[in-house]
Length: 564
Image 1 (cartoon, rainbow, N blue to C red):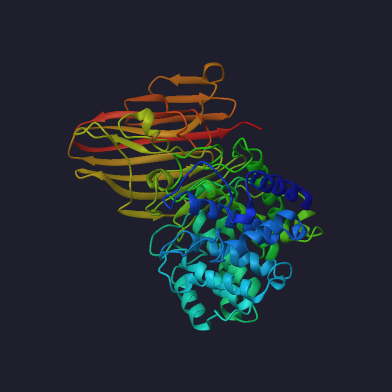
Image 2 (cartoon, rainbow, N blue to C red; image 1 turned 30 degrees about the horizontal axis):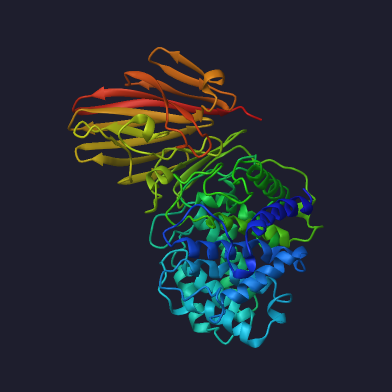
């Protein structure tokens, strides 16, 4: 697809923000969701995240929009301006936004930095330098200190410190594990937001610092190369990434590393695959219901929803997705805009460092993770389900008192005989990842011990639950969610005794099969707006009541995407 295609989508998105905001104030007037840091910081956050896109929009350097952003920066960093962004406290959200500002300053140096006076330059770098000595979260935020020092070097600022840069890179390197995977600080979190983000910054570092620091640049590029296989294993052939983990409100930031690979050309990847995924990914999101009526990005996934959001998601947060627009930095004659379409191979592949199996079929990619957690809002739904699908996604619970509010797709929900509430997996005690299956032990409550084995098989998978319980319990082994928005006229439910339940909709077919042990099959409609894709969803599953003792249950669950 020609470059103009991406430019048109980008242009429509920035025009929506510009139409409701005076960007010269250093703020994007995005109303709605408020994060823990409040509305004022949220407006500044939204403004600064716009810089991700405009940093690489080489055709927009003379536009009024670009000039307004530049004025907004100068006002925001000026202590004498009524629009001053203020001092940033330790762990302050605006430290995150220093990355976009850094990249913008470097990429637009000729058109902005080189045109302003010394005092204005000092205001900018002094404001950014707050991050150097600040206490910030010990996770991916540490890379932000690296990026700011990188900007100081490129801008020849007196705030540049070779010692600090080296120290910050050492911290980042401590988060690297193997096979291209980073963790988010000292946690087990390896979701898309982490490794994809680290490699994005690593390739940026190589783009700007290859002469100054060739050793670390080589390391960052090598790691990104090692990660290519795992990265592509997150996508299906429609360019859709498997929704998994936190920060999903950033949406097409999932494809940002594809754009950075296209821009930097330091990672070996099939150009036709790269071009196909870039085009299909942004097209999927462009055709989704992600925009508010005013054309700005909402908090949510394929539609506006705060249920799935984190406490750090404000109205401006989704514009982190603008990292994708690194593709605008590519020349219009670049191969990525002039390549034939090519599909990814259907394959099942396991990653022991990433702790998951990926199964790509002709219509979807299925993701089977273990030992991958984060202490974030809704983490049990975002990390602990048995499987995540690019086409069938997952649900976020509204409560644990009833099956319909729990929306327990792809989980084993256990009804606690003491409280009547439902318990699900919160973490694994032990785990194993092989080429053929994932297996893990877990305990939802003292006296209940479970070993679960998941065996992927194309669009289907088998589950084996070995349960040892000291108390009577009721178990619900739930499969995939399906679209139930027009259920009265469009959904068909098929029952096969106590053996199988199937739901067929225009979207696709889902179902659950009792292979052994369960009492009956079930179909359950969930609370509205609990699913990431479907505003109303319907589940299939299996259930059984058991007394104290040892049991083995076997089931099969499937999802077939049909919509075109």
